[in-house]
Image (cartoon, rainbow, N blue to C red; front, side, top):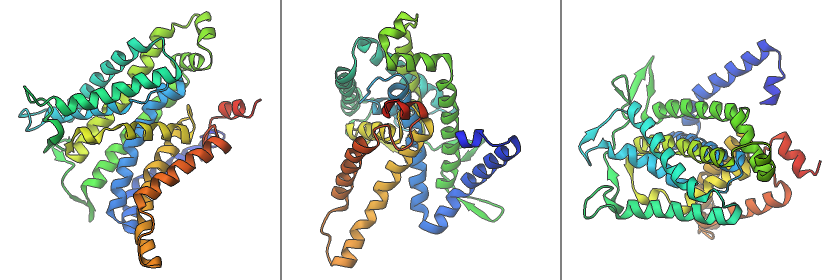
Length: 354
């Protein structure tokens, strides 16, 4: 990002145009090289970028450790699913449901933040972990005496996104090029992810963003300088939750099915690891972390067939290997690059002891 900013205006705009064209052509190039499955993985990666950027507001900017972030993802997904499926026989348009999901998640973010204003560190992590599990258990049991969430069976037949009367669940042909649903969702998710990046960058440089960073570095000093720590923390929880609510709505429309098992503690930890691995508080680093932790576990699925072809049998199950390598990578990161793979210059200097 800094390299692009240092370029002359003409070269900078040309670089931005080249990046935009590469991103537009990416799903078709990936499909030709690796197959359509990897296009779907890229779609999921874009959703996780939005989630990681939302959690980065809470953890990276404000310094509040949140282990229940997936709850806001679940709230947004169920808000969309309940109002765009045969479950309640209502089918609202997505341009009404996505803002609604963001608003509902924002309210839940404030409800989580209000009782935890005096908590820090491990105590805050435990409370947010419990909040995430409470939401999942509620979704799992709100099927009696009145069936609201359909319990562990989840909600099916969720409406896909429709833009101008065009359903993203259908395949279209444009100039002889087949646009499959995974391609259509890619472009929509890319637009939302780009907007999330823009919002995160603007928040970082804003007065509110600087207040978050001040609280992260030293809350007592921030209060002494006149920062209203209570309101600023609540705003961080609300803003971060709204990112998760929008991502949940997009996820529900993409999958066509949601259930409580889609929103587990492991997902919260994975999103947190994306932020830590890439570089807390640094938007490009968070994007990198989300891409790596979405793509690498999928790439390791090929280890099983490789073992079968080379050794004649599967020695280590790919799922076990993924978790082993994942844990090893985190340990090595904490030892050799505690600031993350792509930290900001400020964080880099802090960890270097400057």
